[in-house]
Each structure stands twice: as C-alpha cells, then as structure tokens.
Amino acid sequence: MYTKIKTFEDACKAINVEPTIIPDFSFFPESDRRAMIAHAKLVIIAKAINGDWIPDWTDSSQWKYYPWFEMGSSSGVGFSYDDFDVWDTCSTVGSRLCFETREKAKYAGTQFEELYKIYFVKE
Image (cartoon, rainbow, N blue to C red; front, side, top):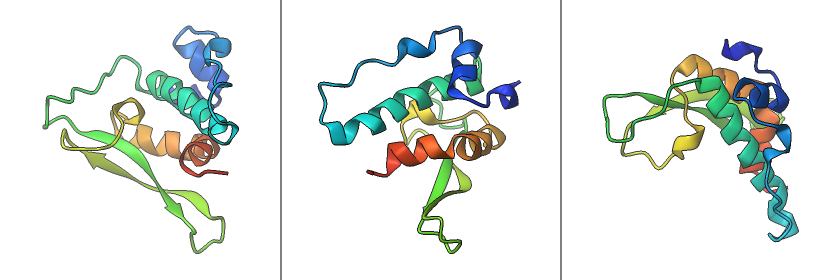
C-alpha cells in the first residue's frame, strides 16, 4: 500500500533499489544540486507510490494527477501543499511526477512536501 511509503528509503525499498542510486550532481552549479537531488528522489517516490501504473501519454482519456502547491499562502508558511490537479496528454507537466489517482497525488504532495519545495523553489 502506497501509504506505507513515508520516506525516500521506503520508496527505494518498495521498488527494490538502493538509496545510493542518486547520481553525483557535483558537476552542476552548486546552486542547482539540491533541486536535482530532490527531483531524482521524487521520481523514485512517484514510481513507488504508483506501483505498476505507467502514464500513457497517448491516451487523453487516462487521467493523470499531480500535487499543486501554493506559494506565499495566507498561513505564512510560504510553500505548502494546496490541492491536486489533473491533466491530459496536452499537459506540460512532467510525466515522471504524475500519479494514477488524486489520492496518491495528495499523499505525495503532503508526505513529501519538503522535497517538492527543494525541487520547485530555488533556495
């Protein structure tokens, strides 16, 4: 069950890869490395949460969901999970970070909010 995936290490275990699978990004500018590592981890997490499901980008009737975040929310946190959204094959959303169901997208967005923040927001 995808809700047992609480950490990056749990995701690695679910798809049978070692947490050391993250490549060396040292040849990229230092300001971008954390975002690249976060993206690599999110790809693995999405794969683990989705299980055997693979998005079919040639099928516009297949719904695909991804977490949606609010920047500068009224709560003052600056970056927080807000909702989910759904796109079809016309999307510009990266296919590796979409989810099979809205529940899975919401789970990923809340459980791994800090990784999404590192990925989306330059620190």
